[in-house]
Image (cartoon, rainbow, N blue to C red; front, side, top):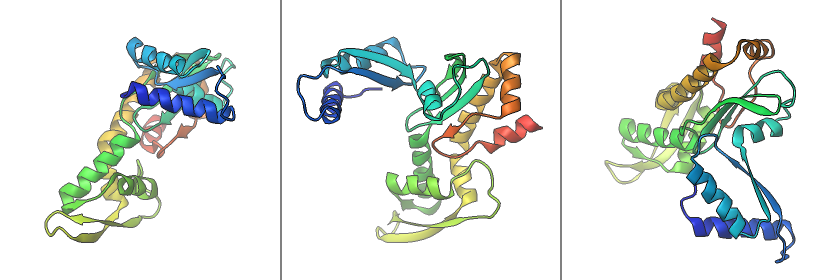
Amino acid sequence: MIADFKVTEKMLSYFIQSAHQRRTLVHPRIIVSVPSEITQVERRVVTDSAHRAKAAEVHLVEQAMMAALGAGLPVNRPGGNLVVDVGGGTTDIALISMSGIVYSHSPRTAGNHMDEAIMNYVKRKYNLLIGERTAEQIKIEIGSASPPEKPVTMEVKGRSLIEGIPKTITVDDSEIREALNESVSTIVNAIRALLERTPPELSADISDRGHGPCRGWGAFAELEQEDQG
């Protein structure tokens, strides 16, 4: 979702000029990936921003489709492909078949929401203030949806809210799973809702060939275990 129209226009103009070696009279065709559930107003804002950046044509494509193409999935075949694209602001979940999206959902719970959850957890439990970059590093290094084979820990540096001085603590993977539980549950429930709406013949494809790629953070092993059960 675009919050600053003018900054977006300038950013797109910079990208266009960089791609075309700083030529000013270039009017390219642009493809923009967007979440599947953005409103018509939000679509219009994206399109207008690209046109104001001197684009000749603007095409909007759902992010899940772009993720499937980038991962090399056979999206043009009759079989079903399940894609889970965990981004920063949204998680795009889609069932793709015959070059089209059968069903899609974009819960606005993703990487940024997980980082914030980790920051709040550390603040609440340890009275330690950490930044977004540290929270993201914790998420990447020891974050998980299900317990790993071996427990892992990580040293975290921040500022004590009680003493006001730098402090180092050690957190383990179970604590981060607890912090991420709400975010992961939201995404898992969205995947489950999609599977419940999947036509029987496409459900068989997903069951036979496994789930599509999960891009971004983590792997939702809890859902897979429930499906196998």
